[in-house]
Image (cartoon, rainbow, N blue to C red; front, side, top):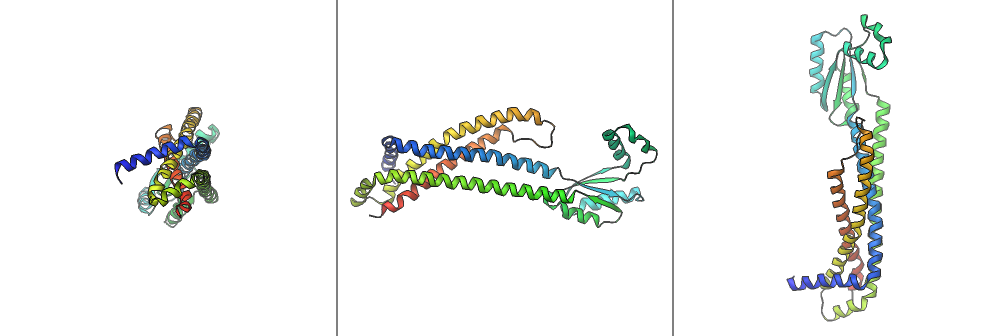
Length: 294
């Protein structure tokens, strides 16, 4: 395509936006509202995903070593557990350390046990993939000199099922909003094209190719998508800034944290902009197809 032709297409797309100001406003408004909903949904889902990852990564397997296990046996056990498939880390805690932690948690009433410590030596094990916690726990339980293995099986399964379900629901919601945006901008641009149908027919009759007719509309859709993404980007950034300023100090030291404002907000902004461009181009492309048959 010649540079002069491309410049002409750009000029036509800008003129069309100016000539059809009400249609432009309607298209931009449709994209703005939908992308704002998508942007807020992405903020929520990405942070829920972060919380889910934090919760999953905090899952530990508590391995109780038999009371009659010798020191050498305990060392061998640590090596065996560390070498099991799917094990990320292994931390050993003596029964004296366990009792100290218990006294700190429940007070001096438990200090009477210090003379006759009834607790076990314990290994705290983390799986590489939290979803494999059950399999790792089963493998550990099969080793000798293991008294018991605990990881809250029922609670962990419910947690993983809930988190996975939340991820799927969020993905479906975002996809539904995107298809809604595509539908709205497609219909809005289709109205614009109907109003210019005679112009398209004349261009086709004098020998214009389909792409010569199509490109100005595609560019117009792209500009509409970009314009429609600017307000959502600003509002989403402002909203998330307020949320992080309010929540982060209160979540310090907690199990989970929100995603940092930067670079997360830049990533979300780029995503909103790309979605705006995509649905604008897609809407224009789909809307003009039927009018190219003359």
